[in-house]
Amino acid sequence: PKRPDRAFGDRLKEGTWEDPTNRDDDDTKATLEQCERILESIEDAPAYVQDKAFDFFDNVSTTLKSVYETIKMTRHVTPKQQTAIDNWEAGVNRWLKNE
Image 1: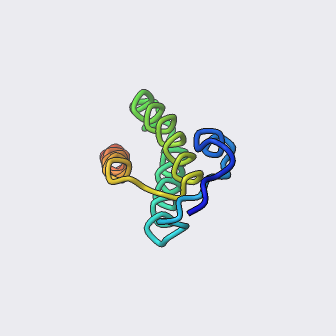
Image 2 (image 1 turned 30 degrees about the vertical axis):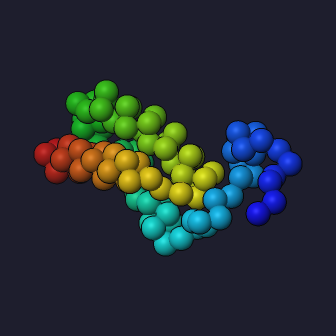
């Protein structure tokens, strides 16, 4: 294949890089939707749960938003990213279940 005229890093930063092996497949879409659900769950949690779980929710929200943007830009989910997202979702659900 023809080499791109710009460096990979520049194209990745600009959001113009496309992974030819994984373009918006169902797993990627499902993971992005999972991230959105987790963030909505945190935002919709009762105030007293948000107070009790503030540090955890803040850390999950910040990190998850970063991972979400990376997945959205690269259109690819790594196994480590998926494991982390699954673990964050389980942790958020535990806090909400024990409210």
